[in-house]
Amino acid sequence: DARVTQTPRHKVTEMGQEVTMRCQPILGHNTVFWYRQTMMQGLELLAYFRNRAPLDDSGMPKDRFSAEMPDATLATLKIQPSEPRDSAVYFCASGPGTVNTEAFFGQGTRLTVV
Amino acid sequence: AQSVTQLGSHVSVSEGALVLLRCNYSSSVPPYLFWYVQYPNQGLQLLLKYTSAATLVKGINGFEAEFKKSETSFHLTKPSAHMSDAAEYFCAVTSDSNYQLIWGAGTKLIIKP
Image (cartoon, one colour):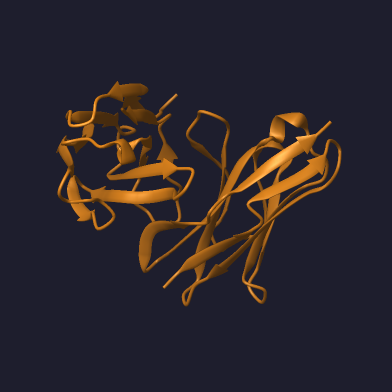
């Protein structure tokens, strides 16, 4: 059963620390999305990759956030330094790269910055 | 630019009653439309999608949605609500000119016993 895998599922960290979230997209999918979900803002697109190249990261605060795909099986989202306002659930989703097919979501990483 | 509006951040229905969750979209090109469901502490899961074939689309768990171009709507319905349907539902749109999913704000469905 193919699925998007995100690690860790939960992360509690102190303000100022670096946080790295990882995502393994479904094998064969060439499109990867990073989303952030909060009660106040809902679902926000942070970054979007196709064939490992970033196509859109305009939703990401550039001073502290970075997203990469070191290879086709791994996407990472880093926050350095983390702040309490970064507390949210971060979702990774992958897709096969055709516009009329859905994105498949991981279970999310719940980040709490204290 | 594309956009999605979901009317009602919370919808409450009695168990066994009709479920109707509203979604209106804005798109200058033919859209592809999706409904996703999110159960507590889980990721989003596809319920159904419209990709320019049949206008009435059937999905999982007894849900269906009808694409109405004249009304720019893609409302989600289910004839009889179950307690297990309590979740948050998201409508989203893409098009040939924009692969990124544009999301609605979500509607929390509450089922009363």
